[in-house]
Image: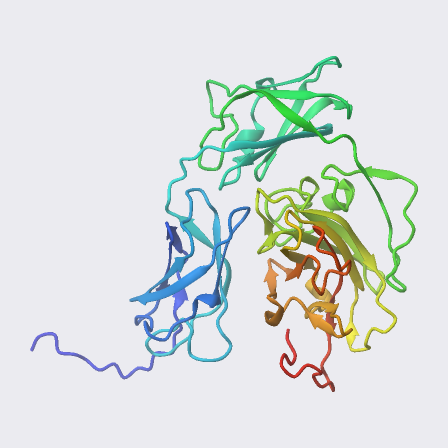
Length: 455
């Protein structure tokens, strides 16, 4: 006999295991699983079970899922450019049979921030987007789907840069630092707010110590680039005591605030981000928070008088900010809870009140708040127009909660002039107060029948 089928009487109880080789080319992202049998091609996970992120670039969503053999292919809503760094998460639905599984019905496990190998070659060089100066720091921001090659860019000779300021003392560059998509030049003196500064960069003709992205594409030279002089801005440093979670009066000194947002450089330099992020990068996008107007980090005080770091991101895309974003957080502070707060709301860091400016008045803005998961928050709770506490970081309100590298990220959206914008005006400024807190439902019943309880 030849090729006689053999019945295997050993029951398959081993779940498929994701191999560490997720890849993307164009708009197709492929996952390969290891398993004794093939995957179930009929009953598989819905597109909504997957989340794709590309730090600092246009958002990506999954529009289709196809299974063949041991491969899951996700169809994305746009092509991925060469050099983009993608991460993929899969959340196995808690109910139903629409999950990634093998032919025997063994479910594959969830995973978070799986690295994806980009098979599209990056052949596009970084392009200078803006140049700003404040004090003795001149910052170049580049437009590129990839980050800059930090070590080689930082090794560029200071002689490659020439700074001019007509009518003022000469300026030279003392040092070069690269992070994310920015190059920061430290000057030998502070620039006066009235100076008109220009910058030139001459790419070295030999060697590889030039401004370049992680794929090795070299940025071009430029001459007499106008530099936006932001003057010298300061933010008052404040301390908080939390017997009632109220902020104390500002101290009588000021601290530098390079990005002119809601927190001083010193506060933002102490930011704690997800695992793997450098100190001072609260949302782990590779750019220091003190250099981003749409990202603000500070420390608040818990009800047990401990310090707890928080990071707020405006114009958020999975906790990151698009490089072309113009959003700015103009205030972020800790406030006491209202007197009529229900006893079932446990808010160790009380309220966070913030204001943010938008590009378009009346638009809907996405925010992310990073907090310490140890505070036990099960949502971002705000009061609606009836005074009921609702969770904006929940599905009915278009939000969600994500555990990102040991930090809890609360994603929520607010419409300018809408119900949760407390200034009530569609004026390009959102003012809101909410609590990263735990609302207990033990012994409670829902007042809103159509929504029930959401976490």
